[in-house]
Picture 1 (cartoon, rainbow, N blue to C red):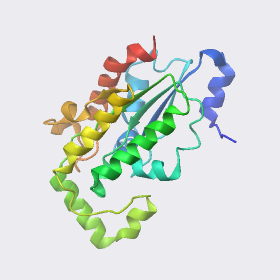
Picture 2: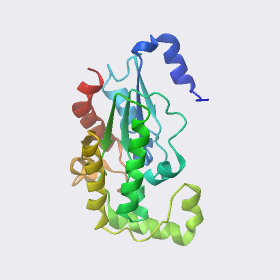
Picture 3: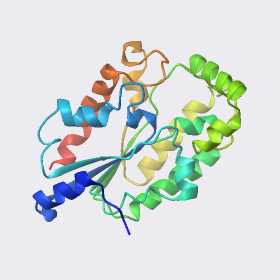
Picture 4: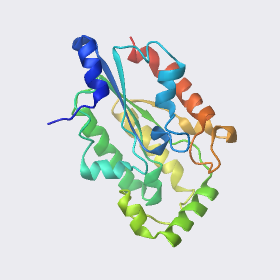
Length: 231
């Protein structure tokens, strides 16, 4: 049985179910809003862009999980909270870089997309990898491996963490997202182009977006996808 939280139950009770649109955001810590108190681009859409993002007929279901990989969902299935979404916006891949294998990522990302399609949403959209400071990310990764060990990552659901992350695999991962999106007719937004050369978009770790970065991503989603979602 699918469990629904109090927010969606409240919306179902107050809205004609036939008119309710559920927009699922499936992602990692960028979708969660790590480092900014959960004020991610999802919450920014709701708070800063007003109607129709925060209208009673729209339910923005943020299913972001810190550390989540596409590989995790391909091997463990989609979250049980996803049942009958109208739209899905998927933001995965950054944490998959930690195992550094584009072929595995290709299989994993494809499986996630196919599993989402099986739910028959009206449309799926993909967000490509955002920019991040790879040098600083590798320092943090090395530190955690030395102080916490692999168990720390395994408890978060990571697979085969390797250090350092190889710069050369990043374009290959982006190609996977773009090519699979194109194959399945999925609109895709290039977050790397949006966030590269914008250090002001990041918190101190230069990995996670700050409020300015969340606003930039939210604005891009509103511009690129808003007209389709609210048509």
